[in-house]
Image (tube, rainbow over all chains, first blue to last red):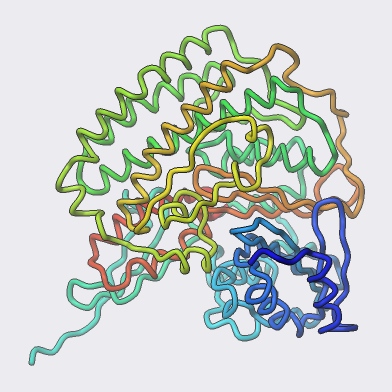
Length: 148
Length: 366
């Protein structure tokens, strides 16, 4: 890959996706914030066109009304990094899977489903990965009662 | 034509070769593996949920229990993540001590890998030799932290205390004896024809698959991809040391073994440089008694652990407890390729593949 800078990439992506993509940044990461349904398309572009071939981390955070999905991407040869964030409503708790684009999302999405109860459309084997199959509830949700 | 049926063989979770509670359901066609289904969660303690009810410093001992075979690495990673979140500077001496402990942990973990691989493949003597040498590292950990296995030595802002005087001769003599140990392993294990037959060309993982499935650490480097976070994305003071990144070429079990064997020697090089260059001084920065990172701040921080990319994603809400902690466990992600590299092989190859992927279940199940 090589010859592009992050600003050019952000500009191109925003031209392509318009209103459906917001861009944000903090001290450590630049965040791309697409709408959930645009996620596979964006991931495909990031991987194929901009060389972000390493999906390092995939996890979710419970913000009450909404769940936030966070994807940390790196490119192995040139060590660029970017984070993708998207939010889904708690009542819906569903978004497209990206396991066809990044196979490593397979178990990581299963873990999110297992512990936070978010469903991934298009995942071929969305079953619990850490907890027993007959476990009730999703412990990482903030409203999960810890009995002690 | 003889009619055959597929059948299932369960490996684990109580099988000794599964390194502490891994269950693999092998679907067999005669002697050959059609598929291997991995069942995890036997060591699940929900540390991510526990983190939400502990203060930032209180969570430190839990991190040691993630990868308990190299307990300094996850602790240092967590402390550095919180320091990055809060902008805490760590004293020079503490940085050096962290590097020394981290690399000793890596050596201990790789020694255990070699030993457990040897015994999984039927070479009991290999285990005894590696444990004999790993014991010396455990003694050093005991000297410095009072704990052998789960040291909890790192602290947010530095390390818990300085090393005692008798640590230096122990460390130096270990480094001095290391070439002899490696020679022994080479004679006993590496050069062993039976072992070579068991792991050469077995469990081959292509570089494309390795990247696609997020495999990191020695397992990725065995595929010939030069990606070591200590070099590619240096953290702490790793940019000050000279060392090589051992690479494989085939991505088979043999390469995964050789890469780790060589990494032991590179880690020893780093420790030697760190011992020489370590300055005197404080080992802990003055940090507030109650840590409250700003609300809305978050960080994803990753280190090269002995198993691969160990990442912490921490979200703060302004209180003294983290809002969310997620651990990106390399063992968890690496295990995803076990079915891929096992298909088409024999049942015995699954054992070799588990051994050379080197998962630690405390970390993958969290």
